[in-house]
Image (cartoon, rainbow, N blue to C red; front, side):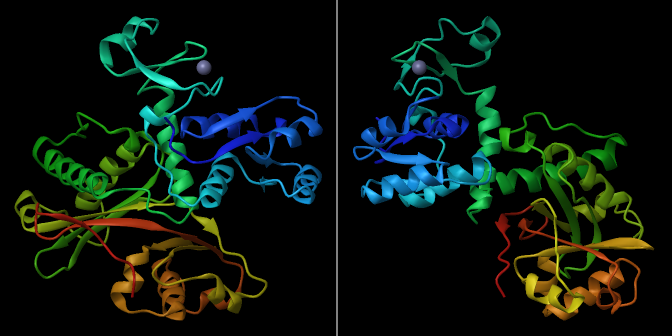
Length: 358
Ligand SMILES: [Zn+2]
């Protein structure tokens, strides 16, 4: 039923990783305290997953299939397993196995699920071995957030076009609703991915000139994507200090663009000139903090303006209110982040993913 092609035996230090792998449909046997000899006996028919270098070496000497997962967190380890088996992560509850016992799941009536869950869900799975009931909600939602992290760690896109379209439409509706009603709108149906925490920026551009009319965001993943999105959309229309507020008429003649950010990570270098080696135009957005303020530039800005890395560093200094060469004199904090960008081709029109290739 799993069709994953690989069966694993997982060592006692990797219990939570084993449970995640089962939910992805891998057949993952796990024993909290099996002796090494027992693990090696089971490897062969199964690939051994271990955090123990000595055990991995012992398996290697016996020419047993083994994957050493020595560091990182569950998402990084699951990503390593997917690279090892050579296919992309895909969450499909009908392919899952039981997280607690590794048994196969079968479609089931909801008997045994809490009444509240029975009312709001119609697809249930029961473990054929231990009887535990699963449904697409609750922990499944957490698993979707986990899956996005696995995918972005693997350098894959976290959002599909349908997700991007939802983000852009929701941003436009939030602006239109706020301009009309004067209060913060709350989107009615929110997909699971938008409940996970994420940094977001919303840009408004005049059409067809492409001139910027507002761009505000929340760089840190401090709140749910949907909340960052609605707040940023309202702010980009009415609270960007560089522009006068956008009117409803102008919105009807403007395009909306949404950037979903990965968490900013510090750029470190022994000397400031080496920042240049750590930054890639087309991959990175930049955030710079110095003693007088902070500034941020989205990755697509460097691409659209045709900047090289030196230009990008100079412009982010100026965005922070600093002299363009401020990054060279040290004492600044520099962060980089990635973004997936979705935009309207025309006002309220088709949504596309923006390519950040040069
Ligand atoms: Zn079970």
